[in-house]
Structures are given as structure tokens and as C-alpha cells.
Length: 387
Image 1 (spheres, one colour):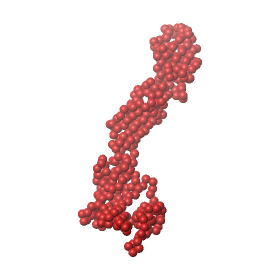
Image 2: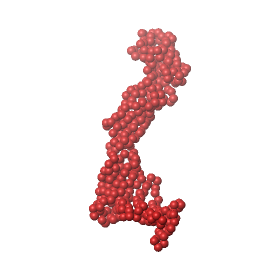
Image 3: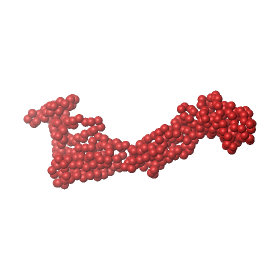
């Protein structure tokens, strides 16, 4: 402790600490900005050799090197009246929290503290603030080299700043406590997709999403979303029971469009984890009668030549589509033929196809595939019969 007394008015200034890291420097003054000078050349005026000047009394703490995110705590007391000296020194915590400092995470955070009188310390109780109240997380009555310790599970705390407290009880019955602040940073619940998998092809209205979890850190709910360029983000629902799952539809989406499925898991501490997987829309493009115009050029029981024109609906009507494996069928006989293909934009012309001779044959189904942007899709036309 360093104390200065004003000669004119008798005002007493005192600054003190119970901390071996502190260095007294009573003569450096308000204008000093070099902490190394204070550490290297401490000076304490005495009654026999006072320092009479307008100076500050200074305590400097040598805390060593602190890593990014690490913090240190110091305690000090000050007085403006010399009669308050005993009270001020008594208010200094006789217990010091050694760790944790800064940021904490995980299930086994070490909590250490010491007192300035370990031999006469009966025990130290360790507390963590949770939900606005301090919760006891451990008691140590057997110091190890003057250090008392416990541990706590930070995953049970909300992310962000929280208070910790160490309360020492001495053999005399006196108690002293110290508080500090740490920042909790824990990840959300680990999750993964059981299904779908990356690059999967989606079709229809009942595509399944299923989430894998870690039983040691489960979510309490999972929200699901489908995201595409044409529809934006669509909320699929929330599941609060295991197994966490949902379904989604790609009906009405353009074939070949990228579909992103997102899952957001939330644990009991409101920590979240977000994952996503993407695939593409596929399936069979069903053409209606007015979209598939089937025109025979000639058709007879002895065989002949005929042609077909298929007009694809929007958004495919403007695409340059490559067709393949086109087949016309009589599903009753059955007979089938493959067509030579001529193409101009989205209008397909199939001609010079030879139908197997027969009587009263009807073409009532035409199937094929088209390729666009590297993806191949099926299409199908079913009519009442063409004969």
C-alpha cells in the first residue's frame, strides 16, 4: 500500500492491494505514461524524506504475457481518509480466482482459487451464475500447494458473459469471496444428414429428410427449410421429437433446378447448428394432350410412315433440348417403334418411323428422354390412342 497526505489540507490518499504482482510507485505522477519506468524504478517516499509535489500515487501490476482471449483480475482498495485504512484493507478479498479466465467451453472447465492464508482456510466453495442465481458447482477443503479447485460443465450455460464466484471460509469463521466474469462459447448440438445425401436427385412430393444426432448433446428441436432459386426459402416445419425428420416436395419446380435442404438444430441452451445439403430436381415430365401434338402422316394396317410433334411446356419451351431414346408404343398389342429424331428448339419432330404391320393398332404412349444443362430427364405422353 502507498499513502500520501496533503500538507495544506490534510487530505489522505491511499491505494493498496494484496497481490504479489503489484509494484508501488508513488512518485511517477499524473504525467507518467511509461509503465516500465514504474516497474523498473519504484519509489516510496518516507516521513523522513517526503516527496512534496502534486503527484499521483500509483500501483502497477505485472501480469506477464496474456494470450488473445485471456484475462486477469486485480483487486485494490483506496481511501480518502486515513481513519478508513483498516476498513479498506479488510475489504480486499482474501481469496483470489486463478482460473478460468477469458473464454470457457466444454464439459470440464477447471475452477481454481487460493487465499492469502491457506493454512487457516477451512474450505473454498465454487459457484457459477446460471439463470440469474449462483449455483454451487463444487467444494474443496484440501488445498494442493495452497490451491483449491473444482470443475463445472459450461455446456449447461448460455453462451455469453457469465459470473463465477469463489467463497473462502476460514477456521476463525470469517468468510471472504471473490467474483469474476468469463465468456461462455460452446457450439450448438452436432447434427448430420442421414438422408438426403449430397448430389441426390429429387422427384415427387415425399422426399425424406432425416437427421443424425449426438446423444451426448442432443437438440430439443430441428427446423427444416427448402431453398431454390425459383421459390426462395420455404419453411418445411419443425420437429421436436427424435428421430428428427421432415419431408419435402419438388413438384412444380423446374427440372434440373438446384435444391438446397437446410436443417437448423437448437439445444436446451438455445445454441444452434445449421447444416445443408444440395441436389437437383428430376423425375418424369408428364405432357398433357395439348402439350403433345401427335400427328400421323400415314398409318395403315400394312405399316407406314408417320410423324409426331411434341411441344414442351414452360419453362422448357424456350430450351434447346436434346432428345434421345424416344419410343412410340401400342400398349395393348403391344408394338413399339423407335424414331429418328429431328429437332428445332423445344419442338420435337419424329418421322420415318416404321411400325410393325398389324390391324387396328393404336399408338397411345410415347416416352423418351431429354438432356438439359448436363442432366437427363424422362418425359411421357399418354393419349387415348392414335390409329
